[in-house]
Image 1 (spheres, one colour):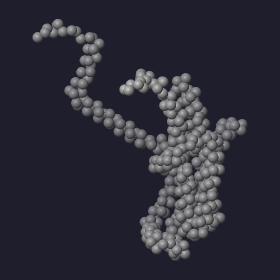
Image 2 (cartoon, rainbow, N blue to C red):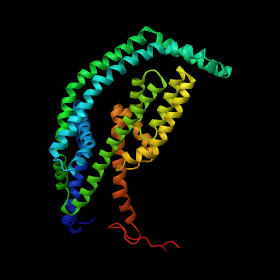
Image 3 (spheres, helix red, strand yellow):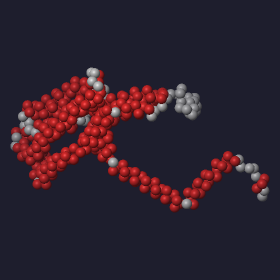
Image 4 (cartoon, rainbow, N blue to C red):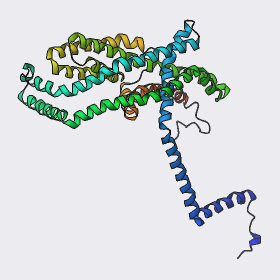
Amino acid sequence: MSDPADRPPVPVADAALAVPERRGIRALVDRPLVVAFIATLGVLGGLILGSAIASITTILFYIVLALFVSLGLDPIVRVLERRGVKRGTGILIVFVAFALLIAAFFVFVLPPILAQVVEFVRSFPEALMQAQQSAWFLALPPDLQDAIAVASAEVAAALRQPETIAAISGGALAVGVGVVAAISAGFIIVALTLYFLASLTGMKQALYSLAPAYSRPRLSDMTERVTASVGSSLLGSVTLALINAGVVFVLHLLIGLPYPALMAFIAFVLTLIPLFGSVIFWVFGTLIALISSPTQALIFGIAYLIYIQIESYVITPRVMTRAVAIPAALVLIGAMVGGTLAGVIGVLVALPVMASLLLILREIVVPRQDAKTLASPPPGDAAPDPLAGS
């Protein structure tokens, strides 16, 4: 056996690196209760943090909604600024007009919609029965008549039940209660929107100051383009939906179809979805009109289809001038995800967010990937030899 004194000495640096590692491993093995306690504290901290975030979800929703509303109103303020109006005066003008529109909706539009919802539910079973006695229904194949009759009977039976009528009436009452409850939240959103709209420039400058000086021009350009795209998408989507609702309301009045206010509101909600919303409402509105009269349904279907073409080729290119083009599949995915998370507001917010992400990918990620060639490999990586292995 060799004498320990004859063994070569362990380098000091290697010993200093090896000993702490062994001690750390031994500590984990020898003290399992300590490890379990630390892990429990970590899980408990995560649960507390998640509970705290969940408790302020409503406040975060108000903040995000107010920020997006301010981005949607900012393009109008900028138009007023270019015409010589000071920003503070422009903000006041835009916000007063916005508040008047909201007040007009609650006073003049919402009551007829609620009344027509109740009327539609109560008269729909009778309208179905009358439609089954019409000439166009009797001209259908017998199998199709039986299928439609069975489906209509089930729908009519469900709508005739007292609990269904009570649920609809209660739903209308709940909407009224929700409107009253939303007033308090509205004050918060209004205050936040005013603050964001007035300090939007300062917020952007604060964001730029967090970046290194050499990247601030690039960050400034991207931020301006993203915010302009978000504002244009929001404002354009709402404008197109309002035009759609107006066209549907006028068509129902001219053709003599029932429930013009209700159908106009449904058109506004559905057409917030770009590309697909107008087509969805075209099918839905034509089917509802078919219950009243095949002739009225045909007239409505043709007239609204003509409007869809005008909207696609004339109105949309003029309204959505600065919005980023989104592939149709991503539009549908964004609408479904946003609608699932936050309803109509989620649909309205999800599409500008997706447009912003696409803009970042196209302007930053894709150019960086295109710049990575064989001639310029990433730092630390050697360029591959094309003749290797041949």
